[in-house]
Length: 96
Image (cartoon, rainbow, N blue to C red):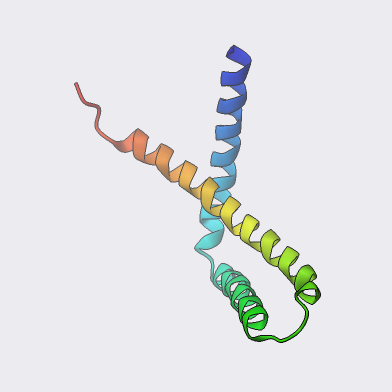
């Protein structure tokens, strides 16, 4: 049981370290371009699938790329949320 707690705490610490790095990254001008690129890729994929008259199997490579990009964005957002939630807990006044 203690090992499970240690694993969870270590995982949380790692997420906070990544979250801090990601938090700094998303404030940069370059991140705006990266995020716009990813969002545009997702929109373009959705449009091509919805409006295209090609066999759906043609889109499999693009579909996998989109899944990867969405997982990446999700991971970044999750780690930032872990960091911000911990900061919030640390700065909230304690109730007595």
